[in-house]
Image 1 (spheres, rainbow, N blue to C red):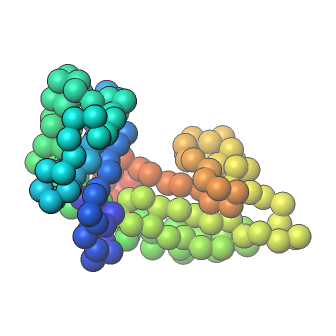
Image 2 (cartoon, rainbow, N blue to C red):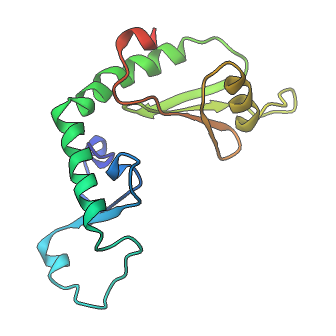
Length: 154
């Protein structure tokens, strides 16, 4: 479910945000072992969104939905397929395709012969109905919905 699961590491503190509520409420959270959490007292931390019962109920429902509807497994299964299909694109603009699950980045080549950036590519793709997000100068982020089907990738 978390990116750290792919890396074989165990963080002392895992900070989560944005997607925890399925985009319905502003929410963030953190998870840590007792040896950390039991040493944090009142006033030792702050939270912009802390203490909102509606946000917490919404987040619980969103996380349950991710698990119960198999979206995590769908991402793990279809992400490598989507990445592999993108890697088949023979373009002088593409330097690299990388990702974890359905969180994929397409890096645009840099050079004096190439005047296209990630922002340019994102705008071109938007004209064709594919909404992406340019990150940094040379990368476009592809984040399809976790309920994507095989036929929508091919």
